[in-house]
Image (tube, rainbow, N blue to C red; front, side, top):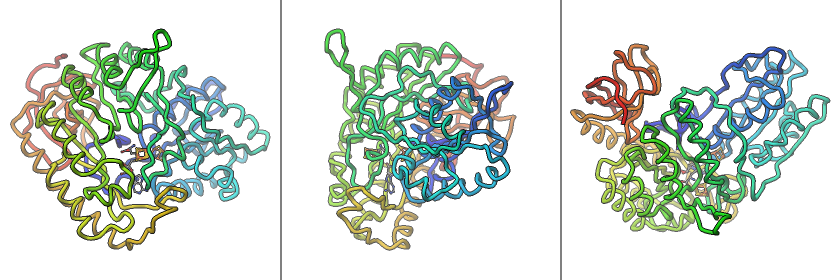
Length: 481
Ligand code: SAH
Ligand code: SF4
Ligand code: F3S
């Protein structure tokens, strides 16, 4: 799930990922006499989507967004707690912000998101310059907390809700390319993967009213957006009871409701959970050309004993059966990516090699790979010993990354000579003469701009590849589905 922010298409080391994961600041809005809000986001796509909710709440309270932290009246860091180094980055950033605050004593600094939820008021004690600590379910309370902070009163709201989905709030699209947008369809997580802090920072799972989701997607399409990504920690367990007749909307049905808005609106989603992804979802993806043939299916490990310790509730055979279903129903070319953790508690060398062999067996298009970072309060931290030395964790991680890089390179090479339908998202990072976009299978494709522009669907003949990107040339004039 990750990276223009989180959804990138390359193989990322942990360090890379933390780097890319960070920081999408808000663009500048006209200020007139409004106060200035600077917001910086860390972590997963859901946090980025939440920052857009926060911007909306604060806009209603009279704030305009700025990309200039130094001269902001209000600075929010929307934080991640998934690994220790994610929190470390926030602490480093807070030190920097403190320098600005010394020059502008009226500046209010708020820590939002998962690290705020994890540390609660402790954060105020640890980081003296922080004025506000707000968890992911308390963003409606931000205007009050800010008002109090402006009078010198520090404030904490880390209440986790069973109902809050912010369904009625229209997000302010931040740093938007005007082509792709994120839509949260649910919040929280009821799984208890033993390594994971998310259930503690995001609370219980709850699904958002499907009609508010469809309305948001429709509004985006009407504004010219061409792609939406439906977000949840475990989208396959999306469920909504219709008030009218008590019938249920499940994820497959929701996907369909969004897909029928227009064949010109691409639909992506993240994250799927191997225990829950159904054939019904796969057949829905197959039925609609505009639902992208790409699935992020985190494996976390390739060994049954470790998967059990992780409490993932599936084993290797189950995972492989789901992969087989994906390939049977959606074809060999369907993009598949994974997450893997190396060096989990008690992992032996042989067990580590089972993760390596899973990569070889599945031949994923790409993956996000991490070394285990113990998170206080999680079941693993309470019950298991974090006993794999850091060097071994790193060595195993490097092995996993090497294998995945080779496989990604090979899989991308196979695409040379094929034609990919690409949605252009903007200029490539290196040159304004090139456009960059993504294929149906979520591969980054770079091609000469010619007369195309962002938002165009372009058929690109692939002529070159690396492990992370494809290059090619447009075949015909811009066309739509
Ligand atoms: N809901 C998603 C994952 C969200 S967290 C899912 O279930 O797949 C994103 C990824 O971070 C996870 O898939 C996992 O690979 C990684 N991760 C989570 N906790 C971690 C930890 N304590 N140490 C290292 N990596 C971790
Ligand atoms: Fe964490 Fe597991 Fe929930 Fe994903 S499914 S957010 S890894 S507890
Ligand atoms: Fe996301 Fe990080 Fe929270 S990955 S859910 S921002 S802990």
